[in-house]
Image (cartoon, rainbow, N blue to C red):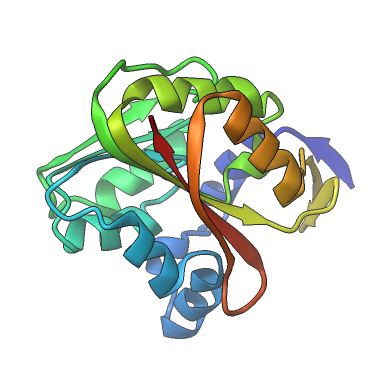
Length: 201
């Protein structure tokens, strides 16, 4: 089994035809364990400028845009993944896809809300990522994070990907350190993830 970076893994997924945004209903139901109704209620993205960190192929973005998001900016580090997201979201003109790493991406006082699902497991410098999101939010802007329960390594097909897991207490510590006010913390119904909603004060 070969060791690969998250970038290499996601580029390979596209080459292999793996696209969660195009999964059949049973696959969509499986993926919704990490977001689902609680997530979308917490995000409340209607008529807001929204940032998605790790847009992937657009699975969550399609729902956010469909629910009335004013404008969505999605960032990702994989060019092939972004190209697929552009295809999957082709019916929406109120979007922008950016090739960027959240540890470097900053747009001060731009977004009403931000969210991330199944991406922070790949981010080593979580504090810097949270700082950049905080800076990019407008005052009283909301950040909704889906925190998965991960091991240090993820095996998929013929490859092994290094992850950077952190427990909920560590995330709460980092949120507080970077200036957020935590509104609520709640486990999803499937218990596969914990959602953290925080506000920029």
